[in-house]
Structure formats: C-alpha cells, structure tokens
Length: 224
Image (cartoon, rainbow, N blue to C red; front, side):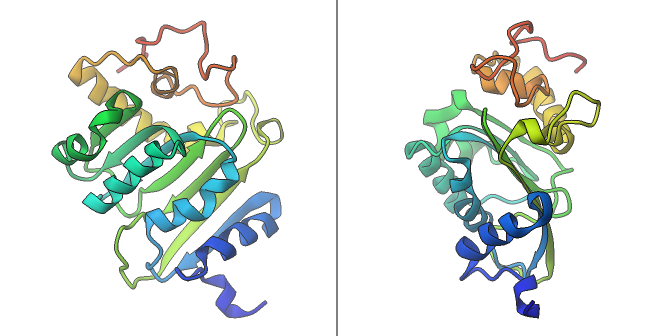
C-alpha cells in the first residue's frame, strides 16, 4: 500500500473515502487528514451511501454562515429530513437567519463540551447509518487530524438489544442530553416523530416505520 493512501486529501475525498470505507474490515475505517477536509466535504463524500434522505446529527465547535447556508441547501434538496446541531458557541441569530424555514425539523443547542476532540457527524434513516468521529472543521487547519468512520448498511447485522448494542445511541448520548436540556429550558413541544425519538435516545431500527416507538409519549424525555 502506498503510504500516501493513509491520508485523505481534500481533492480526492469524494472518491477515496467511500472506496476506503468499503474495503475496510466490517466497514470500519480509521484514517487521517492534514486538517484540510471540511465538514461539508465529508458530508458530500459519504452521504450518497444513505440512498434516501436522512437525519443529520452534527456536533461541531464552530459553524460559519457558509456552513449554515449549506445545511439549508441540504433541506432544500431533500437530502436531509431533520437536523440535530450542537455548537461550541451560541449561534441562535445565525440559525434564525439561515434555517428559520426549517425550525420545526431542527434541534439546536450550544454547549462548551462541543470541541475539536468531541465532534462528530452521524447520518441515519430507517435503513442504514454512517458515523464519522473526529474534528469537524469549516476551514483548513494544517494539523494532523484522526478520524473513525463506520458504515452500517444493514442494522440487522450490526445492532442488538444489549445495553451497548446500538452504535448510534452510543455515540449520540451526549448530544441527547444536551438537547433534552435545551428543549426543557425552552419548554418546546417537539412534534416531529424523528426528533422526539432522538430525545428519547430511541434510534433505528425503529419499532414502526414512522421513526418512533408508538408506546412512548412524544414529550416524555425521561430524567432531565
């Protein structure tokens, strides 16, 4: 193997990353960048593996106007059905500017524990999921950055009912806690089934096709 293939450059991420992911054992890949592949480039490279629209969960310390405009485009083009966004600093005003039309389909909060070492991008729908863990950036940093990418094309092969049996829940539980606190603080009623399921830490495979467990109350988020 050519040593240069251990790094994913921004010019080739669309081709190299999906290929490397599919060649990795059990579709679990560890790789590096020079801090020059942005969150948008990562999303464009891997999202087509989801086949249909999906929930996007993004924990990213700093989000720019350009990134929010891109997220709005994701809604406009029907790539994503819902967005769960956590940032390191408050950007409520920017959210209103760029994503106001989709506010019912979004959970947003800011929290100091969202950092370059606690960042991730998770895509999931009723059929499959992608988990990318590592530094989410909007501008090149020039620093070595390590990532782990996991692709779950069939839940029945990867997920079980044990306590640690759902990898989506495992990585997103801190996000769930942050967003529960924000929803509770705002006294917000969450009517979207997918977002209500997220707040219950209820992830695919769902118990019914609507993305929710019908035995739960949409507004009962457990111990806040």
